[in-house]
Image (tube, rainbow, N blue to C red; front, side, top):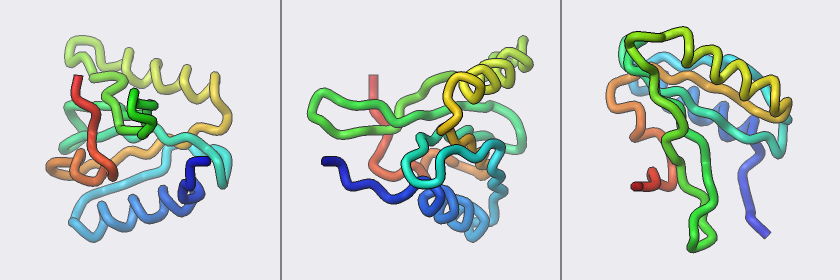
Length: 113
């Protein structure tokens, strides 16, 4: 069985790490306290939004995977997308982190592909 940190502790730790690095982090939606899934929105000065979710890999691990990028020509599409994700999954936590090189805060690495 996969031993995971409870979602609320993982979110709290992420927020504190980003703030300690001089960035901004905000919980946009709270999901299930212990077993909720995370959607992390990374940005830089409120632009270039990228959403990451953990996805199972062929080796059994779970890595952060780019799920959606903001289209600068249609910014509303991105917020509509994560709003739909929230409606579809009441366990989902959505956290926005605004800091330089935001992906460095995603533990376990990012899946390439």
